[in-house]
Structure formats: C-alpha cells, structure tokens
Image 1: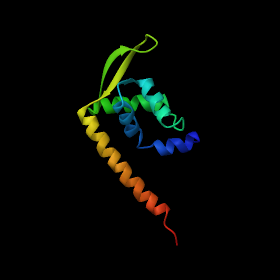
Image 2: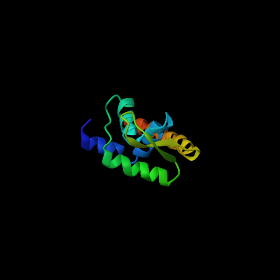
Image 3: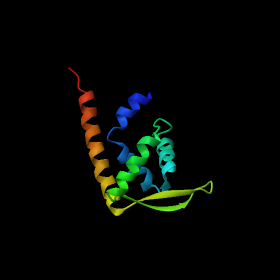
Image 4: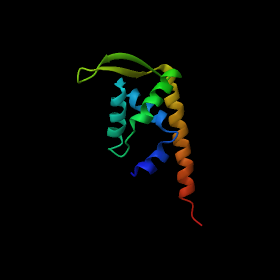
Length: 112
C-alpha cells in the first residue's frame, strides 16, 4: 500500500491497532510496531513518529500501562500492557469499526 494512502487509512485507527497488538501480550514500543506489521502480513507499516505519541496518549488515558524491562537485545525498554479500561475500549472500538465497515460495504455494494 502506498505510504500516503496508508496514512489516510490509519487516521483514527492507530489506537485500535495498538490496543489489539498489546492485547496479545506485553510489548515494547518497537515490538508494537512489528506486531502490527506482522499481523497485517506486512501490508501496514507504522511510523515511529506516529506510534510513540499514540502510546503516550493511550497510557495517559489509562488504556495501557507500562513498566521498564529488558528487550531481546538486552536494552532497557518500556513494555506496554492492556488495562481493564483498555480491554473495554478495545471491545467498543472493535464493535464501532465492524459496524462502520459494514455500513461502508453496504454503500459500496449498492447498484443502480
């Protein structure tokens, strides 16, 4: 997917993608980026400049929590985990996404 089109797609969905990635297990920031990329079959590439402000925002809102740990390459890293509030938000946002994508699919499948 072209980076400019990908940017448009991700507008407003990055938080949902991060919550989903972290719901699968604690991850450091770069690990979140890699997990989203992996799950998407390498179709989505999240820029670090977008990721870290989103992680900060989600933590500030109580959806994720963090603690310092050591990464696979023995570097100090902040690991993020989903909170109960984040799990509830993930459920709500997933429902909203599914409902909206169903509406859009219905519109796109309309024929004259």
